[in-house]
Image (cartoon, rainbow, N blue to C red):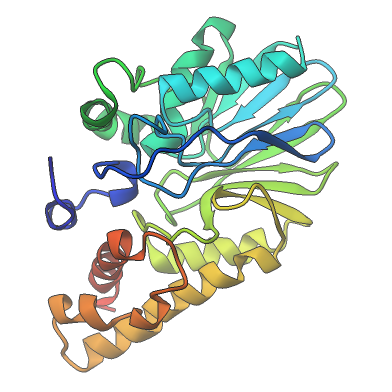
Length: 308
């Protein structure tokens, strides 16, 4: 298996590749954070056979006529448990499965919903990302979970280029495709009726962020999301819900710290390897899994800002 340094040098997002064993974890119970909106919290670990890559938050919205899933889980087993939880609550058809971006912990549960024949909804650039990385992600995940455990790479059947409104029956939700930020294929969902914003990995709370896109774009997207009128948000990683926009404060501080301190490092001719050791060091202790991801984040930001 690849070690963390090889992942960094290879330019692969560490959060996409669960290659480290962690303590055993059970699946978390669902929490209803608003009427008809349920979230299963992911565990703050890397993927292991014990947690079946249920490390990202997964949720669903129940309308009067249908159900929409937002991020179907990180493996076939995770998606199967999520689907069973939906079926225990409602017999309504599952007509939409939204994949917030291409990272494995957010998409590989999609295979559990194939029998429902929903629309699989993603960013307009999601298909290209999965075509490039999907099989590799699946192979690496199966190296951890076991053969066949990851599930298939499910491609989007509905693409969102800008915005898309879906009607679940008396409940309309709005999907928004974002420019380069956490990745180049981030999608969010707003349920205006409850003031709930599903952020995917545009929002990390407690668990250190992982950058696979552009830090300046991410900060700009966060500013825009603050203005959507939501009262609460569902992070991609962290608690089931946080107040919005207050819940973005720690993430913004972290990202701005990376920008500020990296610019100083570039100005002072500090090389990238030394910058990895210095930039953002004050954030250690504020995030779980800090040492697993922070170094690569600094590398990404340095490359982005070096030639400003």
